[in-house]
Amino acid sequence: MPPEPEKEASAPGVPELAVPAKPDAREPAPPACVLSIHAHPDDQEFTVGGTLAKWARAGSHVVTVCITSGGAGSNDHTPHDITRASLVPIREEEQRQACRVLGVSEVLFLGYEDGMLEPSLQLRRELTRVIRRYRPDAVVCGDPTVRYYGAMYMNHPDHRAASDVALDAVFPSAETRLIFPELLDEGLEPHKVRAVFIHGSESPDTFIDISEVLSVKLAALKEHRTQMGTWDPTDMITGWAALQGAPRELPAAESFRVMRLHDD
Image (cartoon, rainbow, N blue to C red; front, top):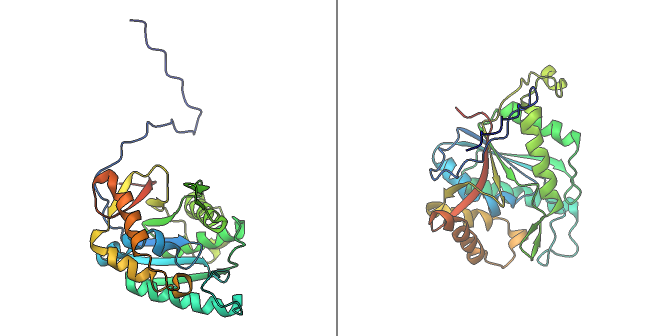
């Protein structure tokens, strides 16, 4: 047999590319502290409400971060005479009620304009500030790389911007001392987030069984009355949960791509 070619050395300071790990069939333990970062009220209830409810029941301290307050969230159910200014407090209260149902400990609204979100340095600084303040073990956000879901849904630009900035805030900003040094003056030292749970990924590797809390997820979602109107989301959410659970033969699940940045 011919000799194996020599392995080319990596450039200094650049880690070698690792062979992707096989999906771990074990469900990760609930993190002690979690930040759920999303663009709008109702985003987390549609996507990760079951996981957050399960973790909250297990004792996790869950903090929801809404980058906008959903002031542009008009639809067929919204009165035509409603304004952004009058819709904002309604949607904020709907989010608070939904979080109470899930067992979420705190809700933060950052006040950015719905429908106009950009992956700005200002927003990254603000999310870095939140991460350093709460020092979470895990962050939950969407996948900014996914533009289309099937042939019927184009991922909202606010969703992509929120996820993009959330990931950049986790790394490198939150853990690098001299990025946003003004945060040091606020007493906010660097913090390393151990894991990021990315929902909506086209290549999930982690599956959370939400069978016992699916009804809680649905109840929380129904608190967003300005968005639901008379529509009952039960069939759609149940179908999504079954589809996500299928790779692990789970009747209901939420799936994630998990970045284990600082695992023990």
